Length: 151
Image (cartoon, rainbow, N blue to C red):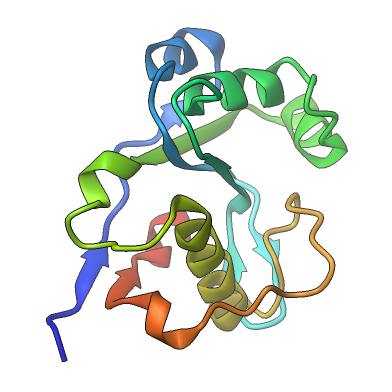
């Protein structure tokens, strides 16, 4: 068994256009969360609201986040949480993980969402998923996720 690799998240950034624009051209995962609202999930509380993905540089983390920020993604949950308090985000640049993650970026997103479900009991509240795509355990690699970041 290879060594386990823990994924730690970068500094939180305010969910606003000036922080989003520099991420144009980056592919990866992004995480939108609250600073103060604890969501009571079945197994534990978390401030994480949404896990998203940009699979290619043309539809980058920047453009996906901007779409959520401007309400164009029509994610009602994110729109309404933003009405009551400023949100924050962090992201993972997929290029940085490619030496430890040998699968597609879609599989990485599935791994993060499945792992969140294992730890919290349901999908992040704004992900609107029904039915769970279970990732083949062989594809989960040895990534451990630092969910405490969103406590």
